[in-house]
Length: 449
Image 1 (cartoon, rainbow, N blue to C red):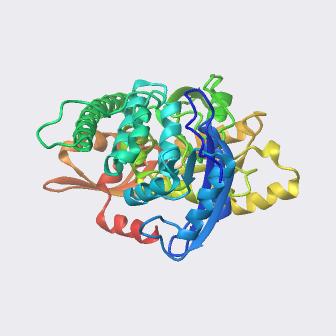
Image 2 (tube, rainbow, N blue to C red):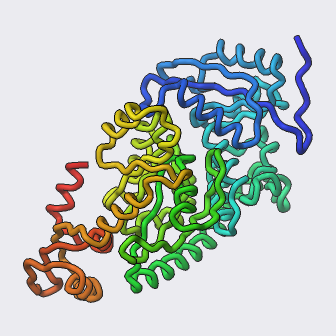
Image 3 (cartoon, rainbow, N blue to C red):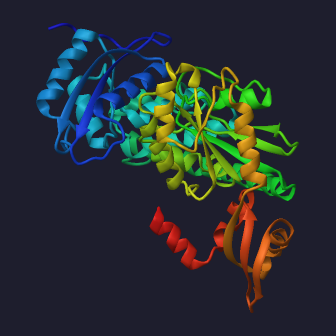
């Protein structure tokens, strides 16, 4: 049996071994093989070199090691053969799973799951102060329940500015009978509280900015889509800007806003947001709340799809699920089929269009189809009216005035506490009234979704 390799020194590329799991009771948009391929891309994005993989189908997770003991032993031997120092599971591991697996694989091997890998990628890519705060909070919230002595080697990952410095080991003085683990847990809890306070300040600043933007009545379009679908390339193409673009997952994290003039001289704001992915960590959704609110406050969403990807429909569904999770599924959506330059034939393109009949085919890279897209956006925002019925409290006088100025009122009644209005509004204003819809309309929407 070969001797276990020592951990790579700083700056040396780490070798990763991937473990794909198909749990019979779980529902996934991607097959085990497709999900494992995506995990491979994530590992490469994180700067790791994938040297091997193993898969197993299980009826339910093993409470000790997630997968069966025989498969664990098989992986342990393969780790020695491949000299891998990182094992990445394509599922979320419990603290017990991590503890037991690291005991079996040995102290030279680091065991992480898909969530930890995504958090590490975000830590490497965050550029702004806000992005770094968000990632650091997500990392600490993920690590707190998983903190064990076996995780001391991950202390260097704390922090959002690249995720490779800092740490919690050895912080502070221990009280009587207090273990280092308890000290670390208390320190992480303190850091989490501090980061939440900082992010609330960021959220308040964004709310003030959005309020000013709303007063100017400038329409906002948020670009959403699966990671690496070409959103940043599209923003550059329509705004003549230079947002960072790279052919890799999560190339950009921080929201970028650009002003764009539409064909009939209407000016709008386009905001590029972080790309989505299946099994998006709940810690990221919570930590990026201030950023994701940019999506929720938009007048229209531009859902950008990579139509050349073989799993384009699964990616579309994953984004739809995330939009519902962050309560942005009530906002009008224009679907964009990007990367048509990668489609081999007209027949193939027509087959994809059959899946998304209302979508606009474009190539952001080649700048083709953009005129049609911008015309569609302008029509959706400035010409399309939707029926709506609302009860506006008297302290929402600004919304009542806006309905008079921009909408078409068919019925209005002033009650004791509120104004009842039935009429039509331009699509770009609908989201402002979402909290004041009549109860029967809300129930109807929930039933349809």
